[in-house]
Length: 226
Image (cartoon, rainbow, N blue to C red; front, side):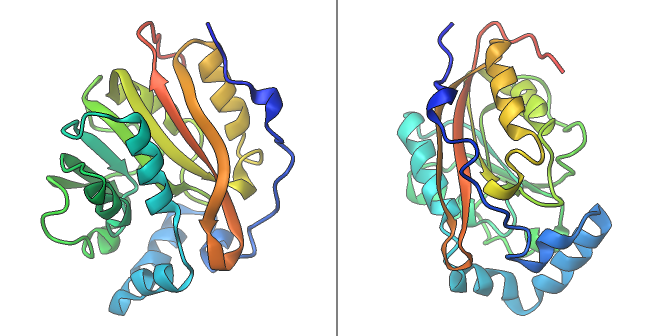
């Protein structure tokens, strides 16, 4: 089994980013939902993403497209928000998309026709999808302060087919704090997935926040260790 060369990555070269954006200070699901309800009024969320130069959706879609050759695969956009990732995936030629998010207020801003279906779900709980349902999962901007935790990666592995892709970002400020570094390595050591790409890149440019971008492929002999 070939493992990703983690020793070549500067794990400690991260910075604390919890003071960059107000929502990073929130610690409960209820407070996060309340914040999104306010943030989506008058399309303010989308306006802020443009103003802040939130380039993670574009970068993630391009990285995903580099590894996903078949444009017709069915993809779960987990934590799709207002559809920013879906729009970038569409530009890359992917159109078989399901969007899912915790906030109905965010889903209400998704452009019509972008996704085949929109689901209201809590990514920190067991997902309603059956085993081996999706060809791929993409999750951008959701592994961040006060949002979704590392055990959700187990659920992504469960619902993705063998050889399916899991593409996600992790805010650099929580990469070690929420133990994503350990989780990513453990899943590969257990031969549950193979890391195809793992790098740190720009995330929210005008807020000086970077993120880890990861693409993994589910292994055939995945045993769904929890």
